[in-house]
Image (cartoon, rainbow, N blue to C red; front, side, top):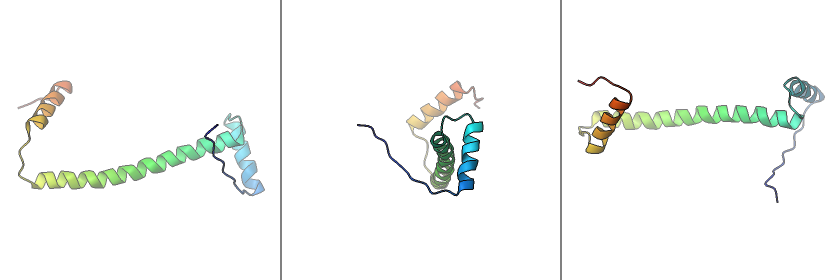
Length: 93
């Protein structure tokens, strides 16, 4: 049994003809292949943008709270810093 889902669209004749021309000129095998490809690209872009905003807010909160606290780095963090310095050839003082 296949895991296929179906979606139905209602388009104007002009929209359909425009999409068919684009699919043909883009080298797609079918209108469906073109619509799936185009919508996946747009969806990925939207999801990436949204995820970056959410992560940025969360990361900013963690970063600010860490800066405002008086906690010293633990041994794991110190080892990670040293490993990164060697890996990326950072100049250490």
